[in-house]
Structure formats: C-alpha cells, structure tokens
Image (cartoon, rainbow, N blue to C red; front, top):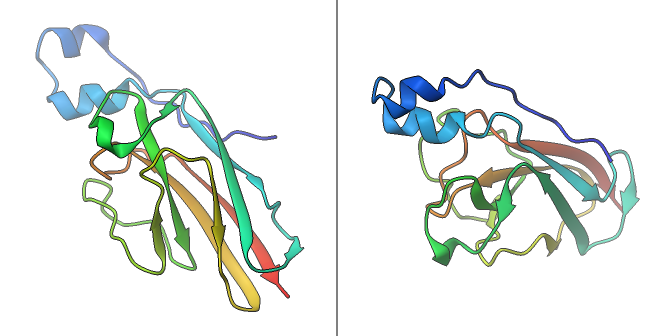
Length: 143
C-alpha cells in the first residue's frame, strides 16, 4: 500500500498571531495527509459493479453531517474527469462526481465496459477539497 503525501511548511506562530488568513492555517495543518485507493489496483480488469475502497493517513473519515472539522472529512469519487481546477469550491454531484458523505470508505460503481479513470478526492464536511488536494488515482478496464 502506498500513500501519497503532500508536505507544506507550517508556521504555528503566524497562525496563532493572526498573521495568516484562517483558511491557510486550517489547510496548512494537513502537512502530511494522504489517501490511497486500495481496491481495485491500477491496471486491473474488473467486472461491473466495481468495488472501490480507500484508506487515509493523517486525516480522519467522518460523515459530512458532522460539519467542517479540522483534519476530518469524507471521500468523493471522480469518474473519468480531472480534478477540479479550483479547490476552494464545493465538489459537484452528478454521474461523474460521487459523494461519500455518509463517511464510508468503499463504494460500488456501475461502470460501462472499457477503460475508466477513478480518482478519490478527500474533502471537508462542506464538500470543499483540501488544498493541496488529498487524492489518489487508479485506471481500470471494465470487461
């Protein structure tokens, strides 16, 4: 299992003294956070529905109804789309953007045959991604 970490310098004094905007302090606390898609593995050939499971490190998964809490949030699955260009906006909800706001770590996806790119994007209780993005990607072929 491989986690992808995003490191960012964090200046505790700047936050506690009010010299940095609040949102920078919140997101800076996540200096060593990661997510990995544990199932399926990239390059695999699978059948639909496809079970997708994730694991996290440095953050805690919780239902969206618990609100926006530092270092906590839930998964979103992005199917065959890129990461959003603006990470300060809420993640949309449609066939290509699956919210897992119940706090679950696995989801079954009904996908058509062919190659699919599945990304996970970890976001806070307000469905706003962390910045830098806490994300992982697999590419699978559905038979």
